[in-house]
Image 1: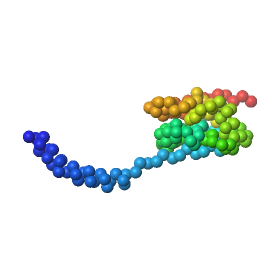
Image 2 (image 1 turned 180 degrees about the horizontal axis):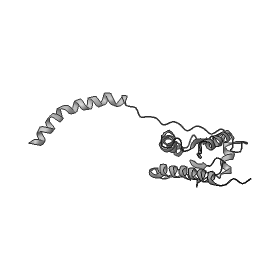
Image 3 (image 1 turned 180 degrees about the vertical axis):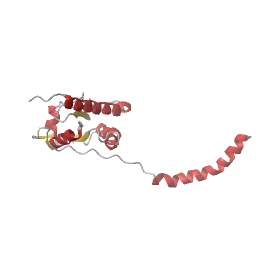
Image 4 (image 1 turned 90 degrees about the vertical axis):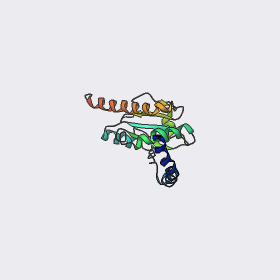
Length: 175
């Protein structure tokens, strides 16, 4: 009896609720994550990393790679746009399509592919976190592992880079 008193008015309001949702749903927009900046000058990125005391995260990708698109859309771009992670790393994408020119960490001219070869990047997506000297700070993330844990792996790699940067500041400078 009590249940009928509750369900009966809901039954009359349900069509109105559905109609309201059809007008509200298109208005509600999902915030789009910022795309990762493309890497062109790693020496400038290293300088910025040194000033901000954060590592440099580089995502090696291909434009035509579906796994790269998923990693970019579901993990890298949201992390880059996140207030929690935005200031903890310089995040860049290095596309390996063609012969994209690149200035490496030492300021030397090279190509994206040559730079990737130097760090044994053989499959994409691969993410490597570097310190401000251009040395990797953690084991590279190769491929798109379980989507459930990929963001966690990215976070751990950035945290490792932050620790490496902090420890480097504590080491005495040798003349």
